[in-house]
Length: 236
Image (cartoon, rainbow, N blue to C red; front, side, top):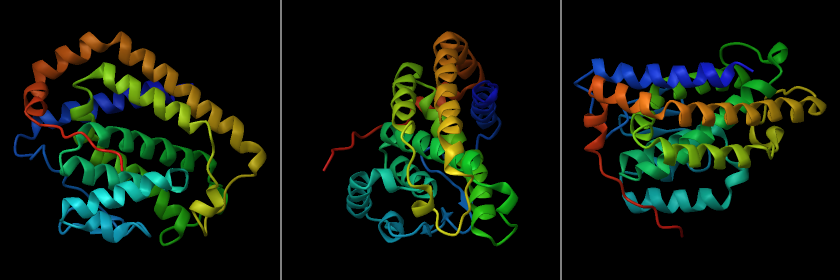
């Protein structure tokens, strides 16, 4: 399976691309993924947790995060991506990595299980969600991966946790109403391939740890992200 290899190199390319953009404020994720998230405001449209995630008050956002944790199995990937962004912006950056990788897993899971022959086109739920998965990864990834790759050992632990949790397939029909998925008999094998593939990603992270560190230093990325602080999230 080639996906993990491609994914790792894509992450590296995204992280390294930040070195060429010195004007970026690395402490704040500037992203716009219509209609789900706009950093200006911010504006959030991901369903039931939108109001709390969009709040400019840290306590409101943390209360929303706590509510989302209690309903973890039902969270959609746009909800997880936006939560990762808000956690990162408020300084809970290590926690944001877990939410980001969980979002990425569920987004890729969505892409593997959706019936693309019945997905529709612009304006249809399936099409818009699939495009959103790609957009979230491309626009949010450089920030969170830029921070996460500073500690490959911790990143490996997070990925392994996401891998373990990902083996349980959520109720896709309930999570994404209006979207047609493949026959349920195909879900398990597809999801197993996705979860197993993360093991290869973990192995590569372990093997290439020294190379990642060297490249980050050479590109100036290490210095830029090392200055960012982290606040530990207290579970409620």
